[in-house]
Length: 121
Image (cartoon, rainbow, N blue to C red):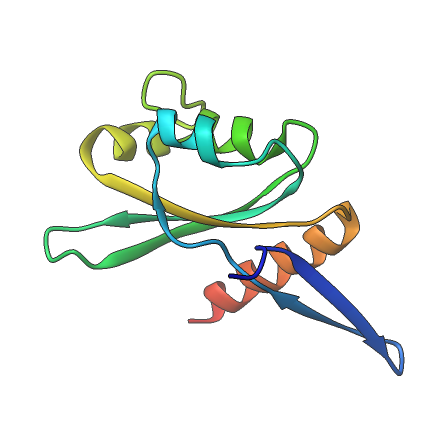
């Protein structure tokens, strides 16, 4: 299996990103602490509904705190800092996937692209 990393190529002044995601995992604080690296990257959050359908929540960037700490802070209902997400974590199964990056600027570009793409739907 390939590492979940973001790669970038530039051609004629345009940047092209390839994002290899980790497998989807349940957002359990113990699993996050044991399996997610404490490095920078991006991650997507989903919740699972009664029909076992993945419902997209958002894409996030983890820089200074690293993926491990940021994921835990957003998905653990005891310490989640975003009220709506905290309530969702109490009621629904949350799952995530991540990809590593060491470029804050690249992550900002990718986050912008994903959020604008979702907004157009």
